[in-house]
Length: 367
Ligand SMILES: *Cc1c(COP(=O)(O)O)cnc(C)c1O
Image (cartoon, rainbow, N blue to C red; front, side):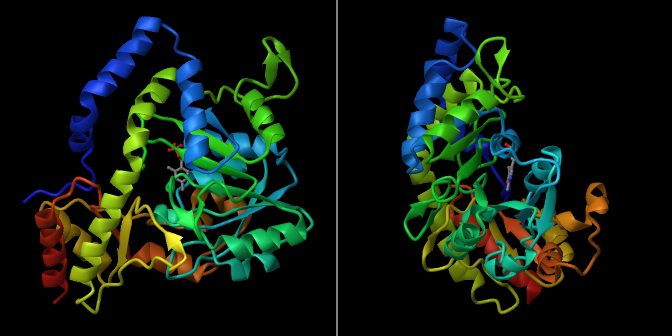
């Protein structure tokens, strides 16, 4: 049996006609920059995420960068974040000219541990950037409380978490801004790169709209230096077709996760993902922890089962960040996660038979 890590073709088959029509309408209009489709997607995502405004961006990475630039975070500033995340989180802080201050993760959820945040705050700290990793929100209440006490912005990296909830509140609705990605492998994936920033603050929304358009309200008159961070019209058209299906797809992922939990739960060597009772995950990834991880990964690959390591090297150990001055051992939970975690296929269209095959292959290998 063949079980890919992700199969986008199965999902595409269910929305093929509408997608082609939507793309064709953009082609016929020959209007490729912003316009009504981008506006419609922005208001749909704002309402889906319980936010006053959403601003389309060219990618999740650019959404993070635009958020930082709009909040005027740059040289001399520090941003607290997690070392266990996709590169773009800390990469965007660096590109803004600011310094990432890492705080270790909770071993159960892989998300930043709020208990470590306060002692990382300095007089230079401007923001906390929690990441809602693998589709589960970070522990937002203590993060918001610490941020309030120290007058810090909170930028949610919600790239993996559109529709996830923390005590009923949607990802991207709790902090100063929320940053989303429509990279094709995210739960809401576009026809290429795309992203979005959400906010509850109309003034910030307006500034984000300028930031994505070279800081100009009126063409050729620039109030700030922004960038070209616009979301393509074609992307918005494709995403508008998908958004109504998102809740159903995420529910299917949760159902798949529950089946894995029950099948893998019998194997004492496997640590299944923890979702805190107050959270609702969208399971962008289903990440287990296992001994002999690399051997198991090779065994799964040999048996036709897609898998991936998110992430094999913590960000504080990346060569490009050596000037930050961290060393191996600084964030032991993050490093342990990097050595033991393994992502399994979780996409909505998986069959029960495929999930049982994956689980059986793992249990037999570890037995
Ligand atoms: C995917 C991702 C991003 C970047 O999004 P792109 O659209 O690929 O630029 C940022 N942060 C996290 C946690 C991500 O998973």
